[in-house]
Image (cartoon, rainbow, N blue to C red; front, side):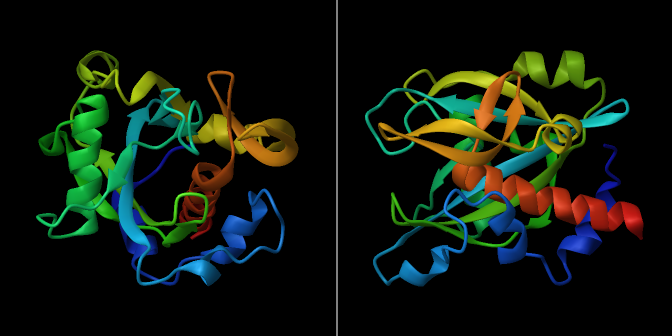
Length: 213
């Protein structure tokens, strides 16, 4: 899937699909994840970096380390909790992405944000920030320069919009020791489900809206 960044930025500035897109990949259908947001919920952001790759668009994902937390070993987007000095959600997403995978803020242009998503197991309200890689020759200048933070990232996974779009299916996943069947995507053979899949579902719907216009 090819993305035109300026058109995508315009589409994200209008009404977003939000919950309707999230529900397509929601592990428990019909559950409204925003209902438990409280004043004590932490805010955070993740970064969806779109990297042009010929007839497709790639996205760096990460597999988290086995740290014993609720998202251990899951495939996620780079990101984390907001800090007091972050002026905007994009600051959080860019800072955390630099810490986790070595992505430099000067190598991308922020296009906008998708809908907030509440993660109940960790009590986080997450904003997905979408950015476009502005350099040339991604195979030599983007992917080889990524460096994982070994305490947080087990491996960097190369996803793509085309693969996500083609691999939507229900699969067996491990939810903190409980086996369940959940809608999911694939990236390099790894299963993407839960909150990360819900965010990517909205991205795909926005990209399709751009392609139809």
